[in-house]
Image 1 (cartoon, rainbow, N blue to C red):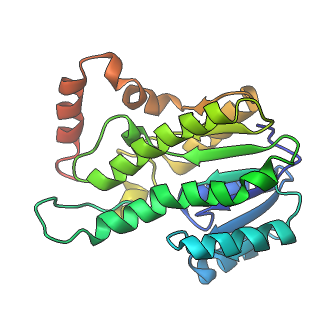
Image 2 (cartoon, one colour):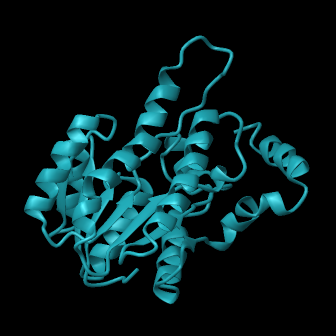
Image 3 (tube, one colour):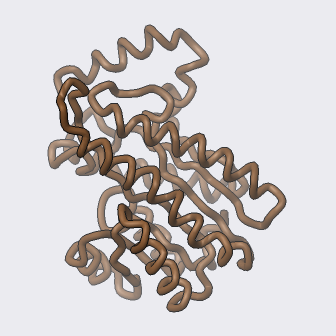
Length: 251
């Protein structure tokens, strides 16, 4: 993926990793469009980054995604990169009767990227230097048991990304997976943004952007801190799972 000369859509671009990626690519001179549910958040991000565009998108709504894709490509016909960064992460007790959190998580984290990719694929196939980046998680490879549906959706998105890459191997579209570790954002609440166990957001983005620049043909972008999770299956997975989950017991 080229780091300059792009027109980039970033979902979830008003906060967290999505916003940090948007600001980094914007600073490099790319045309960046951020999308998300909350107009106020998008407006604040755009004001802080003059020239950055924004569009409201309800990523859970299939019909809204189709309408969004039509408007996006009409207003930004040079669009050549899509970064799927929108996501929600909520704790669940699987013994509870309600499955509302699970349904919202699947709709946002998994069906959203699948539907949006489908809606934009024909357009992207016509572009030079096109790329689709999915933002999964180190938890795609080893689950944090308090967040079962989140981890399941990220594992599924990893699998989908590999299949998408394989099916598009004869096209000009590059498919990239970015798998973050635990990062200081507000994904699970305000406490996470200052959790000393989490990787500082600036450090994560700096290393990530460096990896993209150094390896423009990479299929996976993995900062050093996520590699123990990404490759957990190569060792004693069961022992790592127990130790990993125990380390978060007090969080």
